[in-house]
Amino acid sequence: MRRLGLALGILGIAAAAAACGGGSSNVPSAPAAPLSSAEADHMRLDMMRLRLDDLGPNWRRLAPSSPSEKCDPHPKDVQITAGSWKSRGVDFGYGTTAQIHSDAIVFSSAADAQKTVAANMKASTVRCLKREITKQFKDEKHVKLLGISTSVLRRHKVADGMSGIRVTLNMAKGKERYRFFIDAFLVQEDRALAEFTYMNAFQPAETSTEYTLAQTIAQRGALIQP
Image 1 (cartoon, rainbow, N blue to C red):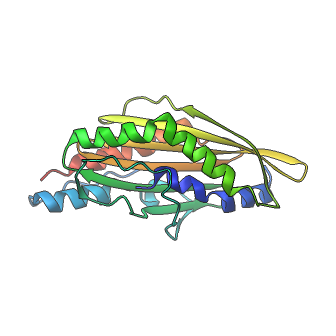
Image 2 (cartoon, one colour):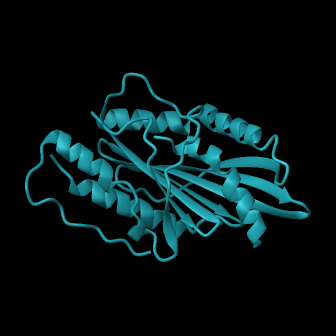
Image 3 (cartoon, rainbow, N blue to C red):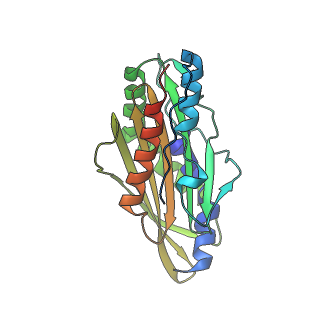
């Protein structure tokens, strides 16, 4: 999973947004035939990734990104049954102002999923992200990073838990100043942990939209049982 690492690849979209100036979801039926434990875990992983038809019109599929893993915590002693720390997930774009990354991973226990959430939400992980974003903009000539702030996002509970942070970039291109928002979420459904990162220029993504995406992920994941 690369929830935080993806944010280190935002320079291109942030710069493109500066040049521009200022859905309903379908939950499928559960499989008719019983699945083995391994089959169920891999299907749950797939179903807890966002899909293009979750996002509405004008979104498009993007090639998977290859972000830095430097800030992504990999807790010790957790066992993964489907997915990988190195997974590239799926990416979607809306024009040049918004982008979403989505991925999922399934652990051997709910406790392992909770341990991973705790590691991602640690203050040291967020500080690492801020440092790496600052480095990324160091040699950029066209867009200037003026500052970074972070905050914990408070959302209604979804499934077994929903945690999130917002990273706000204050930026400038010439005399024009604007902000770029990175909202990163983790949604736990039993042993499965889904993540999605919503990056948006000028204003944050709508809270209701993010909540709906989280519910869609959780509902699909809950359908799959071994």
